[in-house]
Image 1 (cartoon, rainbow, N blue to C red):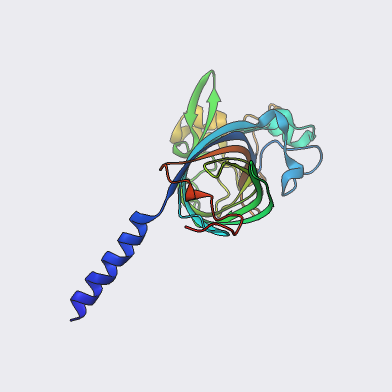
Image 2: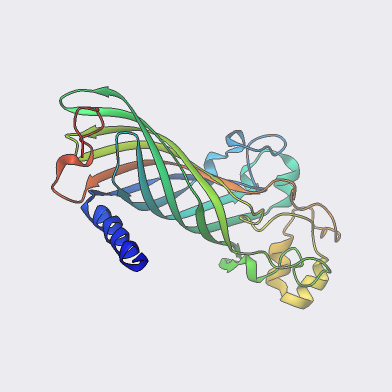
Length: 283
């Protein structure tokens, strides 16, 4: 019958899953927020050339790896990422005067499809080029300091969300596209070290809480309090910006990247986890 066939197929699938070897990895490295704040010299630009080294922070992450074949494998990544940006660090005068800053925490869960190309094999180790892509699920929380205390900016409606007509809260949960490329060295087919560049394609412009225009500062102070008004417009000119004045660039979404060192270890004693990378051994 159909039910018996489906049950048999399900058992076959799970028996295959249970029979595979698994690996566990840990990674850490510096992070870069590519948004509306801070950045390199000159006008703000998309991409790594707008990186400001003073704003780098750190991330840590783990991953569970399933059944790496000679070229393809699957992985589930869980990462804790700290990001920062500060107008104080840029030499561009307009952004310096704007005087905004942010510290953003990101928690992400990324199922990844990974590809590996082995280009050197010896008795002691193998080296490979690795790449990966997948859907990403993340939560972020931008914060900033005001008079020595940190505040969550999403709750303060710094661009007049729910105060100005047509300006609504932004979502702190989102879906993105995580990608990475790396160089991996595999030792004795049971342990690997990788050097990786991870990039994120996101669909939000509020990773740094800055996107569009200034709200009316007295109205914001009345609705949300002096902390919200102070963090919304701390510009150094001494004169608050008029409502509708440019605060960010809504035509360009935010993103981030990080460089990591990744350590991968087989969870089982079976040495077959990496054994088929040279094409001479199989699962």
